[in-house]
Image (cartoon, rainbow, N blue to C red; front, top):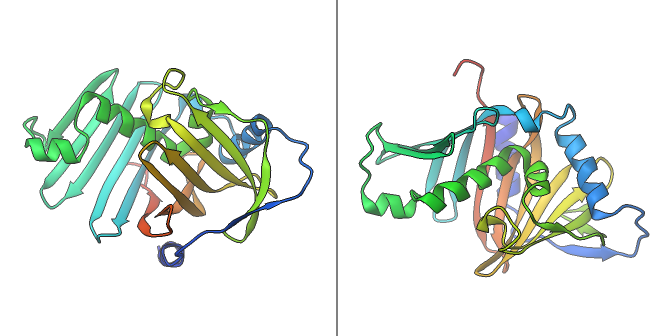
Length: 247
């Protein structure tokens, strides 16, 4: 836990990220790099039948804190987010195609909380896509319907040489509007691990820095993420932690 918090503090202190293109010859396409990244993060090919659970703490720039567990069970088509907030325990998820939600185990939720926490048919589905990405972002991108660009650049990202792999999401092709726009995944040229993400959507643009990894049921999950807007202002940071078996 001590090392995790050190990563958290160091990553959050970064105010900006610089990307410089390198004039290097690349013999790999975007799809080939993505496959190697999937192999790095999911070395045993578990994703299609994956079950996993993590605990995430997110601190927004406003100092608002969100604490939640995220659980996915792909064989049984179950997704569940449980948020532990001052107003109570909020659950939202999908069980075999059906949306489920509750506040303190009761189905009645005030409209303001519903609005702020995405408690709607589309909102819960978008959160599922986002939370699937917490476990297996490259695997999710592969099946998102986004188009992977063949052309790849090598850039300096957060002090490392990384492949910049671009994904373009068009509303009529993606499986969810969450993937609309352009997203660039930064992948370490040495071992094909993910180091960051840049997104350009119709109404928002920013970058995430990744630091460290934790093993969660056989998949290498990003440990710490720090987000900044396009002007370098901090949006927030989150840390992912494994939950002991049986909890």
